[in-house]
Image (tube, rainbow, N blue to C red; front, side):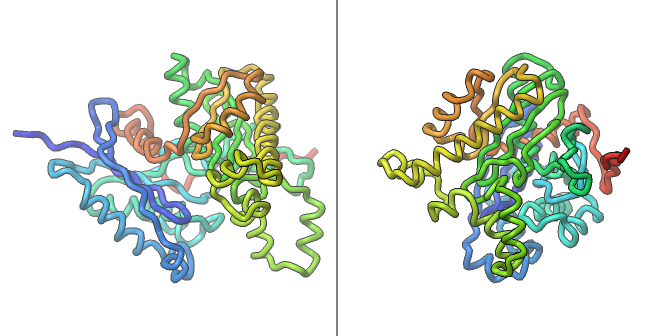
Length: 373
């Protein structure tokens, strides 16, 4: 009699799409069976009063994906969703429970579509009577004590970072170099709609640019803009809080200058010799490289390499320009794309194989507050 196929289901909700995948467990490895990016038209999303209200709509589409692609002999043995905007947590796998669902839907630190990852995974898991998990959410916070000091005791630095993709690409690099994951020292530049440029050492993300601090501007985010003009704008009476936030997040960066977030279009304009587009494009690369150098300094420039990953790492022109500027700091390793569904499945697989223990929400972190002298 033919055996059932053991399958891990993963779901990764984003602002305008939901990415789903099914992975077969083959001994101690994974084989992708199917994946899909379900797009959500803006005219549909605009009907919902907030992100949490989109849950039922997205769930129906996710279940259609499973119905379409789950093999007849396929048996879902675990589910994983992208972790949302949680309070600080260590890296690792977290089991989804009712408390985590409540926090994700009703009390997240920030509003973001990733907050739907845990609820979607949990609902599917309930149907198949299996457990559901999140893996390495963006609130993974492993900053060193030095990295937490900002320059003012009233504004301590904290971490919000693309931990899921960063950690899985470092695992890939450790396998490639045949070096222990905990011994790798590298800079990882996750380059997508948002950027995370991080220093990775001793199995942890010990520092990063936290998207809105020293971060380069991105296709849609303003990055680390000068604080005094920002403060003046906030108190000028010209803008509401929501308008300021949109200028920083969603309508900043490349979009603010060139009125597009499509980097293929930007690169086309650059190749055609458009002077202003070239200036803005080069400025973004300049800032990326400057931040890679800053993160390399955290590890005294003693690196195993520099990882370029995320959607923008698929762009040949961008990769060539970054490589030319930073290759003297360390060897460049390319892992284009987000790799996030695979990372979710690999995290769950480590739990199923007994190689890693999962955590349960709520998670108590050590008090990171800097003691004042």
